Structures are given as structure tokens and as C-alpha cells.
Length: 373
Image (cartoon, rainbow, N blue to C red; front, top):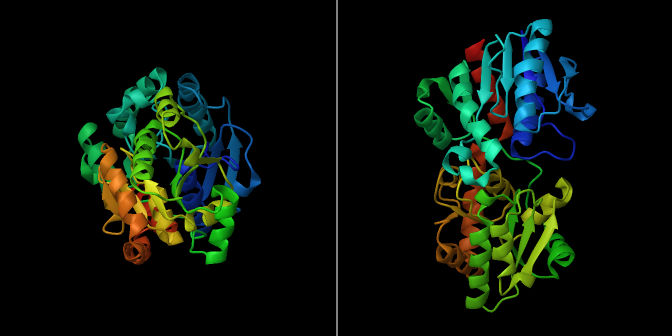
């Protein structure tokens, strides 16, 4: 079979959540199914490290699709023209987009519908584009894969798609995340937080990651407890809104917040494993990969009780109300004061992580492909 794959988010040293999903699942699928031919479709020059096996043909087609108008040109004009030439049996798109014009069976991975619930978090043109096209993509697709039971229910209800058409494949985590020795933790503390323990946030600095309430909760935590604990923020300021900036600027203890920017994986693994706890209190997630990464790293987790996060965390994390600053602060106080609680959460996380791996994701996604073919 010929399988065309939208790989435009495979960007060297710039993989985010969907990019990692694409990388980890396609690396396994292509290597484990040499009997099939895969066409990886990029919108710019690609890195050779993304060509995982001999049964992959990379193709670059313009334009670079990073704007609603360019999205339309790439998916509705460039993709159909390419398909007339290569004649694929299936189009797999791992970032939610499809081509409405292409006459090819399609499997789309829709990770979440955050733009339906919090449209104000996105630029006007982007959210208009998403809300116009994604319901059509859901109807067009032969099957839909998604990353949690929460997202499956959300897609089914909002887009009136039968649940039988939607497969839950989950996300995994890089198994390079693992616990580190105490001397490594001390080295990390010295490098990033002036030899102090820290709460950790990892991710793009986007409004739905709830940094506003995280900053306010950490400020309240510092005022309630005399401690040298800091807050380490790892990620790019992609969506550093005035509201996020103001929340930070108004902090009494803003000097206790450390921004590292994006860091390479080898160092990130150590940073996650050296944290006092991961504070991942988004108000919307389709899955929440950092939760599982923390489980792999042996790090306690504080996360939200809404959307998909309780499904992923189970009983292996402290769940908080992301809209309540006091709820987040109480969890910080509890986890920083109780070593036995931290040990218990680490033990439970070590068990919980077994439910999520990229091999499980790849196997489930291949099962969805087989249902279409």
C-alpha cells in the first residue's frame, strides 16, 4: 500500500507535542511495516534524521504552511496535485488537518478541540480557520484517531461524529526520561536555580497552560511558607500575552521565578528528574505529555482536575482546580512539606507510566490505519 503522511511538523530541534507524536509513532510504524510504501510530505527542507527507513520517500511541496491562507493553499491545492501524481491509498495527517479537495481515503489525528472551548486564546484568523475547517475534516475522514477518551467524547459531541469512527491511541513519553542521582540533581539546581529546589513547568508559554494562575499560586505559596523553593519555567514565549506578562510583573516574588527558555532533551531529562514536583495546571489539555514524562523521570506531579488530565494522571498526581489559585497553592504546600507523599506519588507514577508508551501509540495508530485500508 502507498501511505501519504503529512509530516510538516517534523522540524529539527523544534518538535512540540504534535511533532513528537508524529516522530515517535511514524518512526515505529515505518520500520515495523517495510511491506508498505510511505510518502512523507514536508512544506520545507527536511532533516535526513526524519527519514527513518528505506520505505520512505520524502517530498517537499510549497508553500510553507504556517498561516491560514497558506494552510488552504497547501492542503487544498498542493496536496491534491501531489496525490494525482503518486496515487496513495491513504492520507494520514497527524496534526488535525485534511484536504477536502483530495479524493483519497483519510485518517486524521485530532489531538484536542481547545479552539472550540477557548477561542480567545488564539488569533482571530487562526481560530476562524480552525472552527470553519475542523468540523469538515471530521466528517471527511474515514476514521479519526485521538489521544484520550476525553477528546474522543469532545470530538463526537461537538462535531456529531459517531464514537465508533474514533479510535483512542494515547500519547507516550520519551523513555530517556528517568530518575537521576542526588549529585546530578545538585548540579541541575546549581545551574538553573542557585542551588535551590524548584517547582517545574514545561511547555509552550500559551494561555491555556494557565501561567497566570500558576504565577499567582506560587506567589501565595512563597508568602505562606518561608522557603528557598523556586519556580522554573521551561519553554518558549510563543504566546506571551499581556495578561501573562502582567501576572508575572505583579508578583511579589517574581525574582524567585527562573525562565530557562527551550532546552535540549539531554538537559531537559535531568531538569524534569531533578524537580521537587511538576506543576502542570493547564485549564485545557487533550492529553498532557509532560505528566507522563514526569512519571518516567520519577518526579511527583501536580495537575488539573479538568479535561483529559485526570484520565492521564489517575491517582498518581495531586489534582487541583486550575481556576482556583488557593487550590494550586495548597497542593504546592502539601507536596513541599510531605516527603512521604512525594515518595507515594513517585511509586504510583512509576506504575501509571506503564499505560503510556510510544510503542502502544504506534500499535494503536496502525490499528486505525488497518481499519481504513
